[in-house]
Image 1 (cartoon, helix red, strand yellow):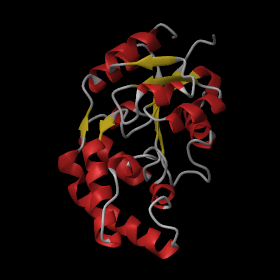
Image 2: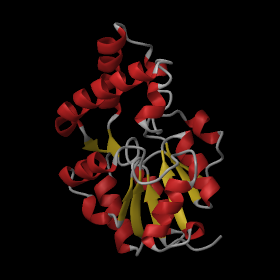
Image 3: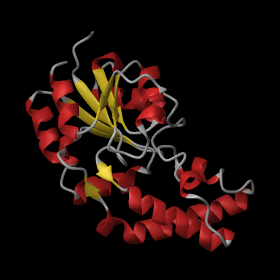
Image 4: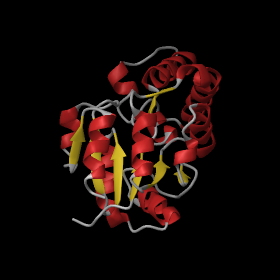
Length: 217
């Protein structure tokens, strides 16, 4: 296996715990626009892909999809700063990875300004040399383009990168880009669903993830 020089992370569900905020935002938007909410498993089924893609599951009408998107964003942005937090061990783990000499970046399906803002208020933006968001490229996870762009921005071949995420879309994108993939079990998708994408590593905690990655340096 090629020695790793860089690590790319998904954001929501991997670095930042936004589960409750995302679910509340989906519930609010569907209730406000559709007049009813949907089962939680339907609302959360495509977390990890851009919001515009997710809204297509809730309505076939473009104007309704747009209204859902506006309602979601208004609620989400209003609650964001008080609702987001780092997962346990993230800051300490990022410090260990930095000390080990890894370059690091974020590849998220969130719009980049909000993702950047979240990392700043949580005090970890300093660790990342790039941030690729839904507004950064044409294609989105599970397409490999965002991961490839993240590696390019760090100046490192994807084969020398690990991609860490909590969704099957992350695992698919990372694998297709040529990265080593690591599945985060503390996120939003169950282990069985993640294993369908054959990640190289499946980690129960951020500490376990860091232990695995430093051996590949």
